[in-house]
Length: 98
Length: 395
Image 1: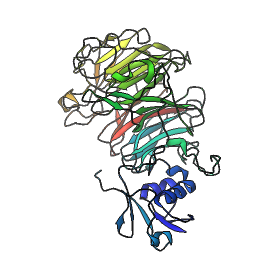
Image 2 (image 1 turned 60 degrees about the vertical axis):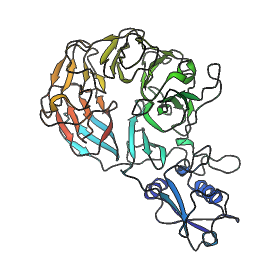
Image 3 (image 1 turned 180 degrees about the vertical axis):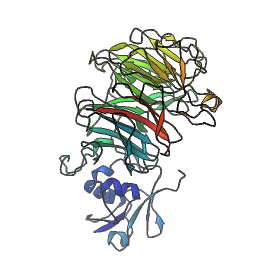
Image 4 (image 1 turned 30 degrees about the vertical axis):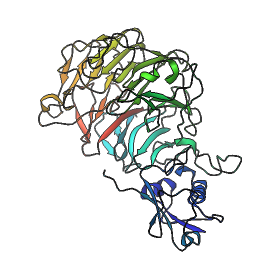
């Protein structure tokens, strides 16, 4: 079981409050975590990564264990603490005006 | 007892305003989709409780929402995990999936258009500017998108298919974005001919299909464009809006970019004539037609350089002759220190008797005239920047 935190507007869209807990089979990667997130909440498809290319949207960032994973390959293993559920994967809306 | 429902899209959410038949008492909803840019929302003419909304965000992209209970509750169509799964168990989640058709719609795949520097640039989906529900089927809705293309859903917004004949009809590689992006912002149905649809694109021009969207032709003859190198190009016009009256669907009214102004076509867009007459400027965004008087039209002229009301006076202009002869309508509108704008999708008319005229401003006001423009009142003053206004007349 992993823990995922998504931004305010996506929590509203997915109709969730607080952290999301997801079952993800090992090995846990960014790709498998996001696949599991979108499988549970299909309305999030296209809002974090592109529907077709699965590329991260420009103003989305992925953080975990005080590391910026945004530019890592989607198949890189997530930190053990995330895979074990002791630390959350943070999906963040990048800082911008407006 | 009749009433009206005004659907307002803003930069920070949607608002639903209900009013009585006299259009004196108003109730403004809490924001829907608070924080999202709502480019447009519009109800089905067949089932007024069904409303489609375009949510957009620089962070999270495009979302399409639908209400089947007049805006009380919203869903993203097809997002129920049990409802739409692929054979391998993954959800489709397609209501916000707008993928350009690169099949050969008109002889060859079309993947690029002209960019600001004159080079060819890949077509990239950015957002839905306008949603136009079918006149006859509540599950069918059209979407005008940026980069310019026309999509259609026939399953209530769950999935979208491009009508690729528009981009592929021949001039697509010459289309180029204006400063505000290359959006398809106007979709007008001919109520007497389901095969005929008009669309308008910034900055490409206006187009018509007579076969339900399979093939298209540019309809820009007669338009002036001092900002284009050729005198009479086939495309490249920054059309701001087209409107018709349902009883005369072959008569089109257009607000064009500066240097052009207000135009009318009496032959379904085959030829346009300028009808600016005594308007104070040739620039503005919306144009609309009185619900019961097919030759009575409304425009909101703006200073072409500043894009605010000339002299700081907010004036709607009305022509009862289909253009050329215009009268300013000022009663109830600010006549000093007014420096807002009225965007292309931010004007609408109801079909009560007298006809009500509505428009929203970038300053967050929504104005209504319950008597065809003679008298105006703000029905709400302090919304976010208004992007779109639609009105539903309810019996």
